[in-house]
Image (tube, rainbow, N blue to C red; front, side, top):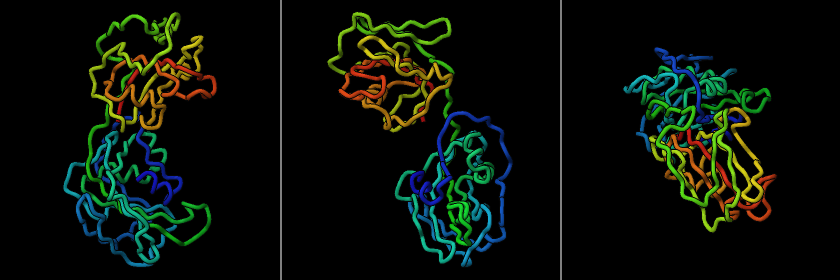
Length: 307
C-alpha cells in the first residue's frame, strides 16, 4: 500500500514509527469540501476484495477532503493506536479504478505525532472512526503535482482492524547472559553506552548472534520493523564506524532492509535483548566494505521495539 500510495499521492508517506502521545478523541473529524462526498456510495465486499464505489461525476475538489462515507460497527480508534488499512483509488473524472491494495496484507499505520505532522487531515479522520468504516478521501491533483488542475483522485480507505501500538523500550530489559570465551568483550561506560573490545578475537567462520541480555518481549521476525540502539566496530583494529548512541536517538528500519548478518542474526531474538553480532564479511559489505565499515564486523544491538 505504501508503495502504491506513494505513486498516487507523492507527499503522502504512511509510515510506521515510534513515538506519539495517546490522547483519545471522540469521533472522526471531516475536513474540506465534504458536501462533494455526499454522493459516494460504497458496497463492501469484505476485507479481501475491493469495494464497489459509485459517486456523482466528475468529482472535483480544491483541497484535501475527507469524511466517513460508510460507518463500521467496530471499536472506535484512539490516538496512539495502530490501525490496518486497505484502499482503492479512483479517477474523480470518470470513476475508473487506478489501483487497490486488497490483494495484499492491509497496511499498518501508527497514529502518532509523526503521522499527524505528515497528514493532519487523515490523522484526524482516522482517530475516532470505527473499525470497519470506509473513509472517502478526495485529493486535488495540484496537491500531488504542484500544478493547477481540476483533476481529483478519490481514495476509499477501509479501517480493517485496530490494536494498541507496541511499546518501545528506553533500554534493554531482561536476564543477563554470560557469553562463551573467545568472543569480543563488551563493557558499559559511565553513560550507559556499550564499548566493544576485539583484542585477541579470531575471524569468524560463521555468523555469531550471542545474547548479552535476554529480553522478555516478543520474538523478532524477519518481516518486522525494529527500533534499536547499536554500535558497530571493525573486527580488525576495533575501529568504531557507526553508533546510534553517538547520534542520541534510536534507529528504526525494516529487518529486510539491512545487511544479511543483521537479518539472520536478529530474527528470532526477543524485544528487550542486547545482542552481540560477529558478522563475516560475506554477510556484511563484502570485500569492498562500505565507508569505514570493512571486512568482518562486530555490533552490539539493543532491540527496543518490533512491529
